[in-house]
Image (cartoon, rainbow, N blue to C red; front, side, top):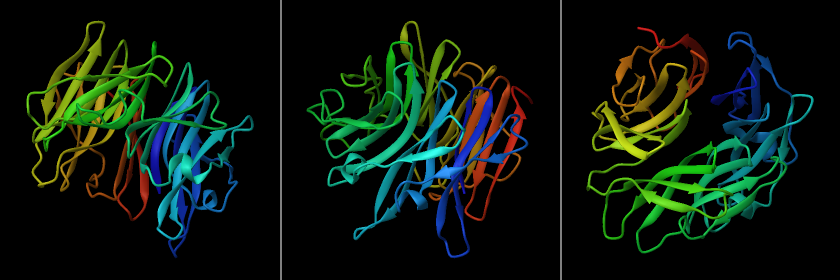
Length: 335
């Protein structure tokens, strides 16, 4: 059950879980120097739910990874979320947390994790709006929510979908649902310390649009999400954010969903789904996009997993359609 991948200090990592025939799960992670030969990491759980975690997101900082995992349980079947950190011997150790840190009555979701110069950040959402969890060293996280910029206000309800570390601190990407409207607008949030946030809505033209993933690509940031019935990119440089190219068109009746986004030396690769089918697209600049053939049919259902990671000119594609997962690598740009 692979779920996410990252490159860290020249090594490739995949995280997820192993499942037995009865459906019972246990957390798992693998590493590789070349994305071809994989070695399982030793996992040390510190709680009963941690021992059953499915790791869903992984990030890198200073040569070590940290991950987020969860397992549904309790009377109401709510996700019991844990963070995991890599220790000196290379193994992953669970960092138990009080249920209310990630869960509780205000819980909505816990999303992706990213490492940066100021530590670690997990993006997610609470009943109060967008949220971030911060840590200096991944040994314990603190919640930031309900603060100006992140909180629901007169401008609408924020939703944070992904995060990136930037030279000035942290960046969240997502959307805002304006009061009285049914469609969302794309938005970003910037913070120097992860505690004080400034929101910027990128478009208010009435077209349903959001940002679902973001990745640093050279000197720029590239974010990708829904734009109307298809996908759209936004690019940030020295002059701020600008709308870039659109691509794809949903044909399955479901809103377009970004499954994965990765940067390589020649551009960015996106995996996206319309609910009925999933595809790959590549761009050198965020403006012009072309379809790329996947080595295997990509699953598009809500329970399917497609993830991407990139380093240099090499990209890793992770696929799990529910009957078992696999990993493929390629060099980009290629025809």
